[in-house]
Image 1 (tube, rainbow, N blue to C red):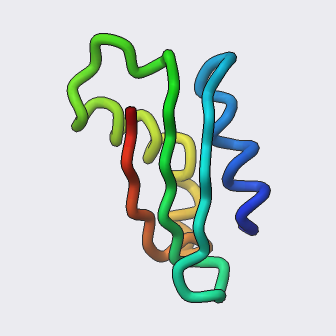
Image 2: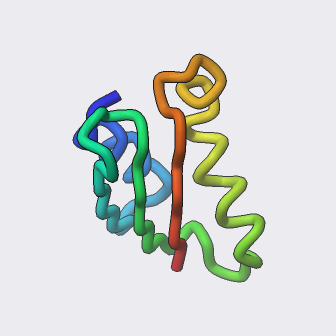
Length: 73
């Protein structure tokens, strides 16, 4: 999964979602993301992170995405 694919996938959370993706190692499997989404309204941070993880769980389970650090707002 390349950074653009990850960004597009995370933008499906809700209309108006803003995503920044940083490839931390240049290997396209260690990412840092910042996600600002109206989908997170009223959610605690743990719930927000679970929502993000659910979107890329298949890639995490397969090892395609090895590490995902996130900030959600």
